[in-house]
Image 1 (spheres, rainbow, N blue to C red):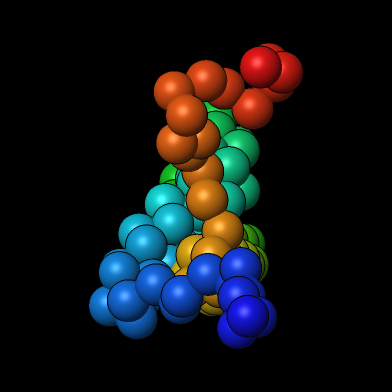
Image 2 (cartoon, one colour):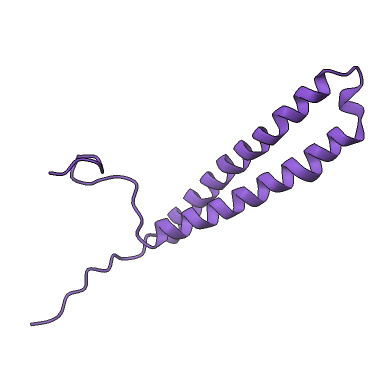
Length: 100
């Protein structure tokens, strides 16, 4: 009797890349805005707040690179996870917390 393997076939590479890019952009934008909102808030309390170098430095040299790096890391990890057979849904119609 031939041996059967239960290893799942890899998902299409295009779908994995599309998912990784989507999650990466969303995660990067979220991190950027979590860092940028307090910077904008501090800048709004001063008359020339947006013209101060610390505000521009904080946005362009801290928030933007951190958001981009976090987005790339999250996108690569989620794309590879999906490509290797990871799933977010349950096929039997239940959720992951019930035992049927």
